[in-house]
Image (cartoon, rainbow, N blue to C red):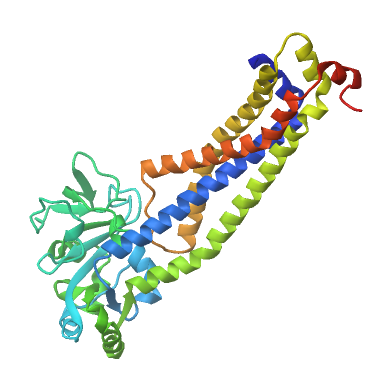
Length: 400
């Protein structure tokens, strides 16, 4: 039976190839779209849950370098400073429940750090922090020694529990849980350690002459707000000179809205490919009994039962769809990486890749979908096989 199936597929190379390509492209689009959509949805949900603060207050000129989404969702390079006294001013605003300052030492890359991707180095004041600490596993002492750091979930380059920063080894005491934000791509250390690193880094003197001594500077203020007082807090922040703010939920919603057009295009392309695949499968196997009456009648004449012929037709579609799915899922994984890279290069948004079980469930769902389509495409042809009269079919030939 296997040799007959392969022979039949080889005899119809063009049809077989066209259907296989359609299945592969459809599966690839479904997988890529599912992974991207699932990652964005998960990133937004986790970011809302673990974002840690409602507002990030930054120097007024910060957004001339980066957008709010870049500041919140990426480890993109940023060097911005303001006096730490601004944190006290923000804390005094009615409706603000707590604040904590952070100091951005510099953005690290492979030239000065063992991490292979650009990584934001953040100094945190653990006496007031409420953003980093909730993401750290239990057992964290609540403070870091000068040679200790905490790394984000997407930071690589660690070896034997250490990571190199500017040529110096630092002990990694914990890895933060995924947050969907900038902390995933950041290295966290004590704020005073970060300030001293910046002070000693060649080329940074221009910042201290411009902003003051690094021991008195912060880069941003993470602010927690009473939800009912949000408008009041925003009004007071707008009245403050030399500062701007980025609202976490609003920025996430804006990023999600910008992605809607991408999702629509991907979903539309996947739907179109699915319809094309369904039509090709249906056309191929709906007419197969009529077009191959002589061939099937000959098999019946030499002893093949109706069940054998059904296995032949079913085997052909199983081979085509299986080969298409294998190629399509592999292509989909590559397409996912390419699309995600292009999207991340053009805009910033919260993203957390799906877990392995979720990816497997998505793959299983795609396989089940095409299995259902395959079954539907051969239901009628298989019924025709059961009604085939061998002697009449051989007299008529394949074309009446």
